[in-house]
Amino acid sequence: MGQTQCYKILSSHLVNGELRQGESISIRIDQTLTQDATGTMAYLEFESLGLDKAQNELAISYVDHNTVQVGFENADDHEYLRTVADRKGVIYSRAGNGICHQVHLERFALPGKTLLGSDSHTPTAGGIGSFAAGAGGLDVALAMAGKPFSIIAPNVVEIRLHGKLKPFVSAKDVILKVLERFGVKGNVNTVFEYTGDGVKTLSVPERATIANMGAECGVTTSLFPSDENTLAFLTAQGRTAGYVPLAADPDAVYDDLYEIDLSSIEPLAACPHSPGNIRSVKDLEGMPVNQVLIGSCTNSSYMDLRKAAQILRGHHVAPSVSLGVAPGSREVLLMITEDGTLETLIKAGARILESACGFCIGNHQSPGTDSVSLRTSNRNFYARSGTASANLYLVSPETAAYSAITGVFSDPRKSDADLSGTGMPEKFLIDDSMFILPSFSAEIKRGPNIGEPPKNTPLPEIVKGHAVIKVGDKITTDHIMPAGARLKYRSNIPHYSQFVFESVDPDFPSRAAALRDAGESGFIIAGASYGQGSSREHAAICPMYLGIRAVCAVSIERIHQANLCNFGILPLLFENEDDYGKIDQGDELELVNPMLSLESGTFTLRDHTKGIDIPMRLFASEEQKETLRAGGKLNEVKA
Image (tube, rainbow, N blue to C red; front, side):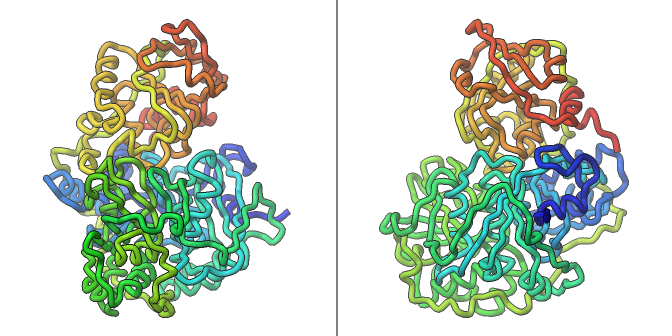
């Protein structure tokens, strides 16, 4: 029986365990990346390991999130990141060089390599054939230390593509079609692998768009084969030395199959407030639009901006619309400057934004009250934009550009633009001057906002307290730990913890802290798909700091589950989903015999208020059980 592409890469990087579906395994990590919102804590954690330098093949520190430097905090973080990178043998990508996933795809990602990043959209590199996964900062710090990364050997779903996309239909519409089929929950420990004759019609940047938003389905990663299109991209980037052909064996067996005829896809949109809420653009036509934003790590490539500019050429943005365009990298910005694309965008009325994450994470460009915003980014979670009453729709660059002209939701297939010259160039404009190579000599600088990574205590003999909060389904890490204006506090856990669940229940931090200070354990009660979205480990660190000892949920997403274990919070699942409805916020709860329960993986949650016992199941591997017993990896791991 042949191997899938996924299992070929895992096999070549296997360190521990048996490569059998559902088994816990550990793999060697070749490359790591961090970004500045998660990176400061990741490097503080790496420092705590006591190593002189990074031990993996390649470690890159990108600055792309906190680039709107209001106050001293972000600038101090960046200076810490620059100096610790220099000291520890890490390449530093300066602010302005671009978004980590776009830049890494351009300059470093390679087929057959493993990549671990402290950002949930690290699977973007699956478009070039890397096994690329998002993780919490502590897992990335350990990978930099040369430690293997633990995952569950995944299910592999074949997504077989046929035919070719029609004009004005794009890769963004393909992944929205996939989201329509698979949704945003229930895909834990799964990998999407793209095959079929249709794959050959997609360039690496288009494949990267599709792989990027696989994260919205909750999969570990997505993979495209490494083929002649991969070689063409690496040739255009001037780095063919890293090319290897790689694909599934012809007789590979998959766990599921989803077939898509690319020629049948029409322009699609993800409607508020979930990337899985898919409708056709045709059904939404005529809806007034107030804001259009083109960019983010999903759709900010040179090709994306060229297509948008061609649609805008000779037109002007509607008076009711604010149009912003953020090139994904300095390379893209330089190229659109040289070929006239930038001039076309500016003449059409576009506001040119920094090559950074910016609007996607709610760091700027918050839309107006009750407004409609069309964005080419990957997430439209409630209040993520910074405006709770706004309605965000995720669309392709083609749909975004055409709708900016008309002022209403519009099908781009009605445009008369000529997109024939917007394919991948034979050569990219390469300028690596914004990378700083390490000299191992810098003095590490720490501003007053930079603290130490907090540690939990070992699992106690008695875990008793109260349900501090009860939340519903699809609670994202944005709900748990807000970004936007609060992002600059990620280096300061005591302060950042004041904003846990800010958009859900702003009194949560004070309640949790009061219970913690009284010596009680806190419990979070949650519905399905708890912790979806970002890889931010702060969604575990800050609740841990406030005394949360267990999350009791219907289901928990992969990265968040790992982060909970990393910081000593028990991830518990209801054996019977209906039991979720029996617990109320404020109930007095106790875990019966937690130490024995940890061994067996079967817990009893005693609700003293209701006088009932509820069976729970530990969602953790044998290795993670040891971490939970120790109270987290910082108590357990030594370099």
